[in-house]
Length: 276
Image 1 (cartoon, rainbow, N blue to C red):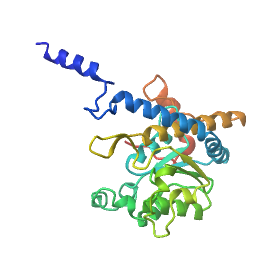
Image 2: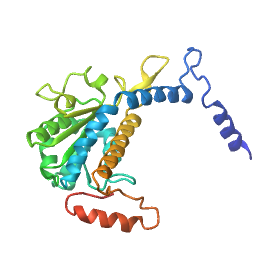
Image 3: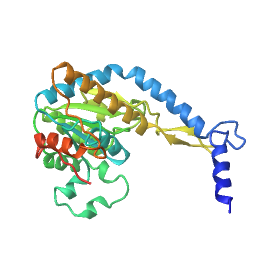
Image 4: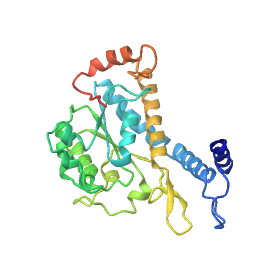
């Protein structure tokens, strides 16, 4: 009865080996890690100044009792979650999402059940998301979209600028500048932002070649999360320099975490949404 153990050992031994199946190209885990390291190094080096500018916008907002409003659709929502409502992150932060039109706006659930990508390409949903959000004039927005061309995120960016908010775009410059905008204006997210954070992802996001053509192994989630945390680190430094105690979440899974977090959240009652 040792078949399972043998299988696990064999699998582990193969990880990192050349799995190119005669292509001469290593497309295994080790190759992916090498690619990710290269992109992470590039992003860390090239985006330091932009990170500083983004942090300065956020610090100014927070010192003025503002909230950081984060929006991303599809996999980019993971980065909005990295900014809003997580352990080690800023309490005055709020996550916006396409489903807000159902959760807070009363739209039918069927609104979210169309073909993949349909809703995020619809510019009209953006105004409803903004109107439903607990937004104040001093709030800063972080809009995340690796492609930066879909109708909802470009329209939301347009509204954010119309209303006078600071706007930080987290996108792939390489991918976005290769694409034609899906917004009627022809603009892309990066065309509207006060600060652009480039996640360094290539066109199509994936970095490893498939033997029959195409690529796999996406990197934008990793590098975008890195940029989000770099900005938070600079915001914390800026708040401390300004003589403020940074309002930072503790993990709910450490002793006293819930109590600490509730006290801070109470300062922003009605302005930040927290849910499952």
